[in-house]
Picture 1 (tube, rainbow, N blue to C red):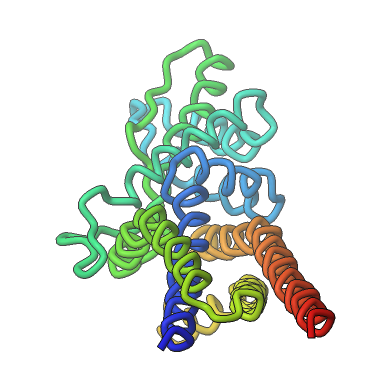
Picture 2 (tube, rainbow, N blue to C red):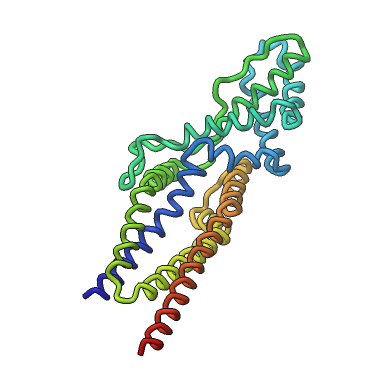
Length: 289
């Protein structure tokens, strides 16, 4: 009975840890706004993404500048030029980070739950208004006139269904402290019930290392999975949307890999600890005998 109990709690500990660890990472790097800005911030300096960003800005700026008709023909080329050069302006990094903060607020709903997602989901969007305002400010400085900037400049990145999925994922990730505590309690219960604690410790280590390998494989294959999902849905997304999705997934995989390796390392240490402890206890019994 004790052996069955130890095996049961070992399995429970691994399942809970398998959910809690990625949940903690998602909560830190995607759900929390500062983590999201840190994760997605480098995309703003990617040359390919910058090209699509400035193209979208030029279109939005000339369409929504709200200038008098007499000035439109004169100012529009200046706006388009400023938009194409905005990534080189000193204030661009902060404007891009502000864009990410606004976009995070739009895309991560606070009312999501694990089972139902979002009641009235909306598209996942980037609000490019801070970057556009920087470009228009440059134009205004050049001309000596005030060029109004729109309060929002929204570019759709994903469908409303994706926002509901993101909401469910965020709600589940928020449970990681409870799940993590449950994993620790279950692991200690398994060790407490085990007839041979060294063997249980080794199995806990083996399972933890296996989780790390699964995480690593998932991180490595995430870009390919995104492409497959996009192809299956036949989604027609703009270049800036596709580039942002691809870039964010690639960044998540890059940032997540050290966590995967750390989990593998902890698992190997526990496994070796269990094996060494088993060998030592076996020798002690032999000596006594």
